[in-house]
Length: 81
Image 1 (tube, rainbow, N blue to C red):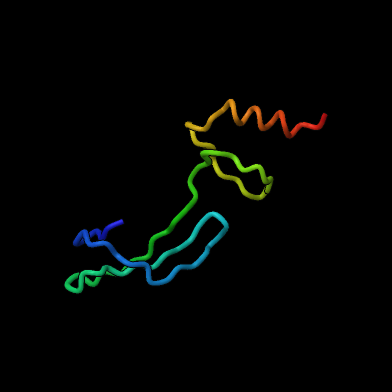
Image 2: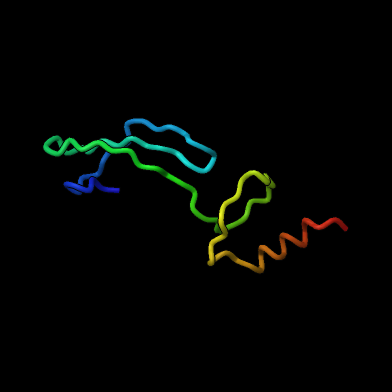
């Protein structure tokens, strides 16, 4: 990410966890002539590969690029015999 005003790389000065899927990060532009500071959010947006650990409270949308055959195989492996 670059500073939207001068295109210099900012540095992260602090962060705060908002949830298990989101974090807030405070950045400060490293250009002394600019001085811009801002807060950005880092969020898990979609699943590319499913976890083998089940946590029903964690719900992340599946990517359209997910390997559906692997997902189906995993579902079959989780079914009781």
